[in-house]
Image (cartoon, rainbow, N blue to C red):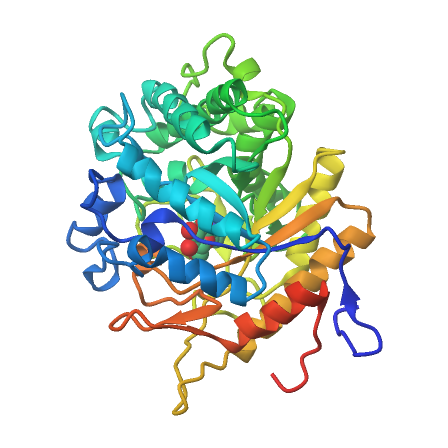
Length: 478
Ligand code: GBH
C-alpha cells in the first residue's frame, strides 16, 4: 500500500541501494580551471535568451572546490551510492587526443573520498556537455562524434575502472538528440528534426562503441549501463484508435528509438515508417546495429511524470505541454499529428503532474521487455518552491510526499517481480536546472546561491532515515 504505518512499514530488500544523483555542468562550476574548455552548455548558457535570467553554470554550486564537504554531507545523510557525471572537456579539452591529468585527478579524488566514506560511486560519462570543439565539427549528427566518445570512455575507464564498479555511458540520449537538435531548448540549440534523428542514431552508436571500449580496459566485475528517459505515454482516450496511434508514435520516439537497438538490435519498424518523411535513415551503416546491441549489465530508468497525448489535426496543433520552456519547434519529429495535454492531478513547480503509478508502469514494462536485466531508478524527484524558514530550516513536505509515493511505487514493482536494485534521488542538492537556470530547485539539500551554504531540507532528513532503515518512514510530523 502507499501509506506506511509504524506497524506496517514499506520495507525494501536489504541489498537495495539508496542513492542520490547530480551532473557535472549542473553542480561543478570552475569552468575555466585546470585546462577545462567550453562545452556546448557553456556556449549555450552564455548566449542571450537561452536560459532563465541568463543563468550559467560558471559557478553553479561550486562543487569542484567543495567536493570534500559535499561527500561528508552525503555520508551524514546515510547515502549508500552517489551518481555523478564526468565533464568531457575537463578530461579531453578538444574532445580528442590525450587526457589532461588534472581533469582526471579531480574525479579520482572525488571517488577516493566517496570510497573512504563507504559510498558507492556511479559514473555517468555523458550528461549533455559535449566539448564545443566537437559541436563545431558537427556535433552528434556527425558520425565521428560517436568514435570520439568511445575514445573518451576508454580514457576515463582506464583511469577509474579499478575503483568505480558502476558505469553509465549516456544520460537521457532523448534529451541530447531532441531537446538539443530539434526543439533547441537545450544546447546546442539547433532546430533541425532530421539532424536530431541522426543524433539519436549516433548516440546509440556511441553507447555501443563506448561499452566495447570500457569492457576492453576494465575489470569484468564492473557493470555497464545507461540511463533512459522513456516517456510513460498515455492516450487521452484509450478507446480511440487514433489516440492509441499517437501514443504509439511518441512511445517509439522516446523509448523504442533507444531501447529498440540497444536491447533488441533493431529500430521499431513503426518508428522507421513514421519518420520516413524526415529522414531516410541512411546514417545507419552495416554493422551498426550489432555494435549498438552490446550486452549491458543493468538499465537505468529516469522518471518524473507521464506524457498524455491524443491525435491532433495537423493544421491545429492543439495544446502542447512541453516541460522545457517555450519553443515553436517541437522536440518530436514527424509528430504534427500528435497533441500533448496536461496530465491530471497535482503539479510540481515544473508544471509536471505527480503520478507514481507511471513509475510502476515504467518499471514493469522493462521487467517484461528485458527479462533478467537488473534495473535502477537513476533519477526521480521534483522541483518545489523551497525557502528557508525564519529558523533557517527548509521544510518541503511536498517533496517528502513525492518521494514516499514514488518509492512506494518502486516497492510495489519489486513485489510484482521486478529486479530493481536501487534508487537515485534527483537531486542531491539544488543546482543549475538547464534552461530554467537556478529558478527550479530539485535538491533534497537547499543551496543558498550567494553563500553556497548547504542546508538539508526535511526531505533529505526523511530520506536519510529511509536509507538507514531500508524502509520508508511514515509521513507523520513532516
Ligand atoms: C532530467 O531530465 C535530467 O537528467 C536532469 O539533468 C534534470 O535536472 C532533471 O531531469 C530535472 O529536469 O514534456 O515533451 O518535454 C528530465 C527531462 C523531463 C524530459 C520530462 C522529458 C517530458 C517530455 N525530461 N520531459 S516533454
